Image (cartoon, rainbow, N blue to C red; front, side, top):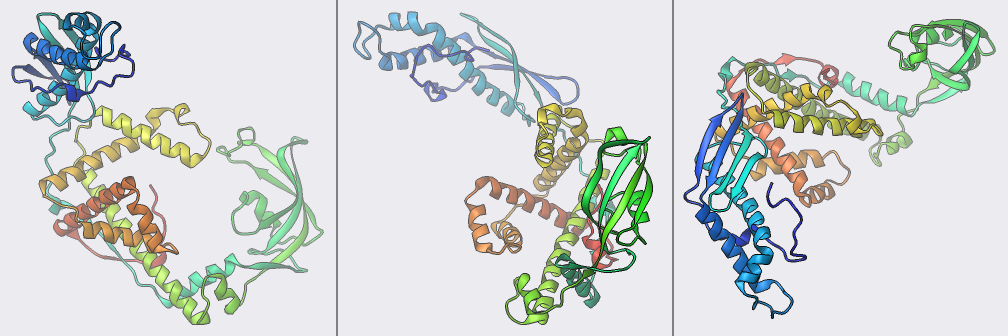
Amino acid sequence: MPGDGGSSLGTIELTTDLLNFEVYDMQVTLETAEGLLRRLSVTVPAAQVDEAVEKRLKDLSRRVRMDGFRPGKAPMLVVRQRYGEQARDEVVGDLIQRTYVDAITQNQLRPAGGPSITEVDMIVGEGLRYVAEIEVYPDITLADLSTLEVEPPKAEILKADVEAMIGNLRKQRATFEAVDREAADGDRVIVDFKGSIDGELFDGGSATDMPIELGKGQLLKDFEGPIIGMKAGETKTIEVTFPDDYHADHLQGKTASFEVTVKKVEQTVLPEIDDEFCLAFGVKDGGAETLEAEVRKNMERELATATKRRVKQQVMDGLLAAHEGIAMPKALVVEEAERVREQFSQQMRGAKADQLPLNIFEPEAERRVRLGMLVAELVRSEGLKVDAARVDALLDEIASSYEDPTEVKVFYKSRPDLMRNLEALAAEDMVVDHVLSRAKVTDVSMRFDEVVKPQEG
């Protein structure tokens, strides 16, 4: 389109501030195309285009340097001959930008993404014509929120829960000691093994001095199960059939024979809950009693976070289910799919985003876009306002899980992007609270471990 090419004015900076006039006489025709697509046909009278070009040239005449003339003294005829076409192209670009904004305002459109400018036609004496194609946000009619059902989990942290958590901490710092008996579930064994298929060794099928903690599911059950009951120095041949979906393609569905030798059987030794153990978890004074109190406090925080997460998930799922027919701007879905793909590639570390098919990320992108539109509509229609106190409370909640909460808060407040994310989360929390005030809410009793267990999907 005009104005997209490189400038012939060297280092002179041209900005839209040079175009100090308003367009009053433009003609705009709105056409509703397929779905959410809209076509704006815009015409700007020649007189206004010419006026803008003259203003641009006069400004240039005061600033450009031309051979044979002092700065600002070049005749307008010379300036027009040299810079006329360039000035007209740049004015066209500025006019499209400004008149497009006026056009969508006049027609009360809510664009979902930027426009596609086509059919640009600029003829001297006839003015400027162009077409702007845009997708708009759909008009959303919110469902009756009282039909939504939400079941917040209710759980208490029992003494047994705390003891189990401390037991997990002990397992984290467990040691092993050799024993002269058969290997049992929970033991660690040190083994050598060689695997073959049809009598031939295969890549990745052999190891020496490999530790295996029995019962943890580190290896296939067909391999690990028969090791239970073996003693140090014993050798056994174990037949293993690899699953059809095994991660190594060349082994899928095949049966291998493993010659396994147990070199050592070790039993787990849990540490005593003494001052040394407590110190390892940051408890310097108070011993086991203080450790238990700290563990309970962390569990309470974990339970509150998990409860909030589950309730939010139910509310958002309920909103989606109640508004399944909402049309979605394709541009937003594509943009969000690209974002989801980039996040996935970062998580996979090494996967190149542009090598992953975009369509596999579209279902999640569609879910996010639909949910984002619903949240925005609820905020708008209900007049919900995110106040600073709610954002600060959310920041306090996040910072509380770090060793130095003050440092975390300072870091967040120094990053506008992080604060915007917090404000978006605060808006979502407000929507959740609003829905809960209207929906049918029934508390459901659950155990601590059930609530904090990661949800599928």
